[in-house]
Amino acid sequence: MKLIQLDKENFDELVTNSDKPAIVEFFSPGCGPCNALAMLLEEVADMHPEVRFAAMDTVRFPDVAWAFDVMAAPTTVKFVEGRMVTSVAGYVPRERIEELLLE
Image (cartoon, rainbow, N blue to C red; front, side, top):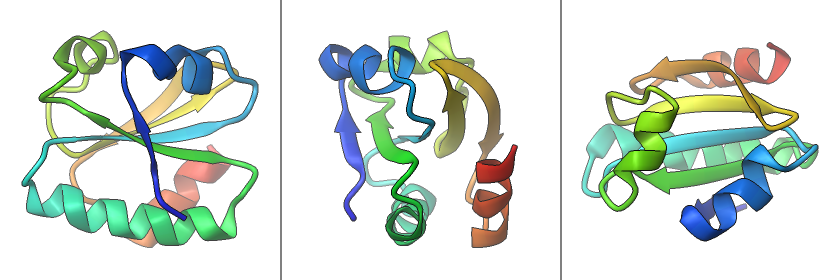
């Protein structure tokens, strides 16, 4: 499953105003660790259809990243009932992504 590409127009609808949990990767284009994490998230997304997996470009939408205290790319943020509940900066292994799903 491909990550849903977020922008200012669909972020609220798909993340903050949604009752579906979401894992959002805040990424920077051309970032090697960001690309590797995106591929990993796509694999995990296939196993967890109950969670929305998405990506937000921090270069195009820095104000959205800043609103959630994202200071580095990649940063993975979990949202539940529209609220940010946890985040982790940098590339993380599959095990950490699985832990995020349980938090």
